[in-house]
Image (tube, rainbow over all chains, first blue to last red; front, side):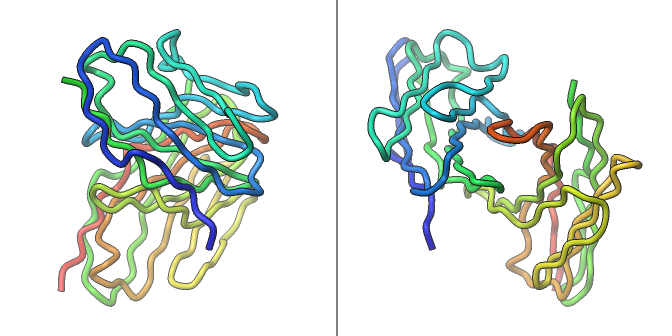
Length: 110
Length: 111
C-alpha cells in the first residue's frame, strides 16, 4: 500500500539554524500539506500546496517558513531561523480526497 | 474561527463498544474526518463523513449530523490495541484546504 514517507525521523538543531524537512507524498496525490504537533497538543495545520504553489496557509506559517516541490517526488518544509518554540513533530500529508499522513519528523531546537 | 470539542478521555472494557463525540463550530464545513494516533505515531485516517448519516468500515463507524454540528466515532469489539488518541478534524472547504483538528479523546481500554 502506498504511503507518505518523511526524512529525517529526528532532527536536532541549534536555535537560529536553518532546517529542511523532507517528504515524499503518495505518487498520484495532487494536494500536499504540512502540519505540526507540539508535544501533548493537537495537530495544527501549517500550509497546503497544489499545482506548484501555496494554496492555503495558517497564521503559524510566517516568513520563517517556506515550502518547495523541487522535483516530481519531493516536498520540503524549510524553517529559516529556528526558535525554541519550533520544537515539535512535523507531519507531511498528501491527498486526493482523504489526507494521509507520513510518520513525522521530530524537530528538537536547542 | 474554528473550534472542535471532544471529551479528553474515555475508558472502556475490552470487547465492548465505545462512542466518542465531536462537536464543531467552524466558519465553513466540507466534511468531518476521524484519525487515530498512538503515542509517538502519525495520525492514521479512519473515516470521513461529508453527508449526514452513518459510515461503516469494519469495526469503526462514524456518524455526522450537519444540522447539529455534531459527529461521533463508534468502535465495536474493542481490542487492547485500540488504546490511542482519536481526533476529529474538519475540512472547511474542498480542494487543498487544511484540516482543523480537535484536541482528541484519549481512549483507555481495560481488560
